[in-house]
Image 1 (cartoon, rainbow, N blue to C red):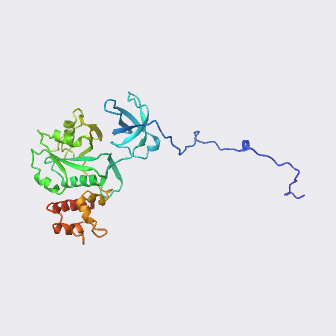
Image 2 (cartoon, helix red, strand yellow):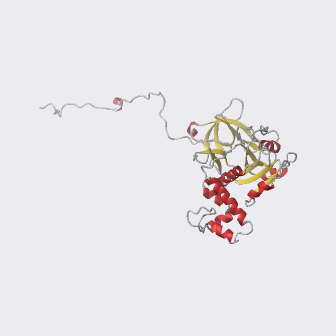
Length: 344
């Protein structure tokens, strides 16, 4: 019999599970699984503020049992931004007692996202606030001088996010805002004017009730002063304008949600900024904010920019023919200025 042949009568070795050798896990822990718990007992909360990896959230079914809780982000959410205004699901200790820490395990679907980029060439978006349905743009009539282009950028960001913008001009006792406001005559924009010695608090509060309103504005325009007047005890830091540069000094350093003292409404105060990049914006969303012009634009050729030099633009032709009434030219001018803001 050759060496490679076997004897049929010879017993072959038998193997079972005990003979299997498994290499031990070098980390000494269990292998990770993609199956995540459902957290059926999680409760929903509102994110009020973010500070160095800790989140202040509000839990409670109504104003009588609401209380603040400090929370951390679950490991599986480490690549997702959690911002002021988010609705999140919590597990763990939600009593809010000193030394307790709950855990955010889920972010609820967002209705809106206000975003900005570092500059117009940066497509990476920075989420400013979630779930706001209104934006109050605060600008001073003077000291510092109003910046039309910055207001245009706020408007573009609001229209892109599906947020209703409003405008509040402060320090109208220092300068007449009429010339500045003429730039926005073509917009369906609610405007408040405020003097240093007489703020229209009742009128603004009425507009904020029932809404989540994000306050934005250049440093030094009186935004935090307005917030403190609307919500006594909020203690938002205020500053003064530099007499040499004419610019406001940054005071508020974080975004926080504050409940109106009366009625159902939230104010989301943001730090003052000097630039607002629009690299993330879809220009189609700007046109959709002008519902009457958007309806006419359906007759435009594909790829129409709707700018003054756009060939065969149905909007330009309708305005020239007087088909959009007396407000048509002003609204078209506003639309084109915002589109140019996005393109510049």
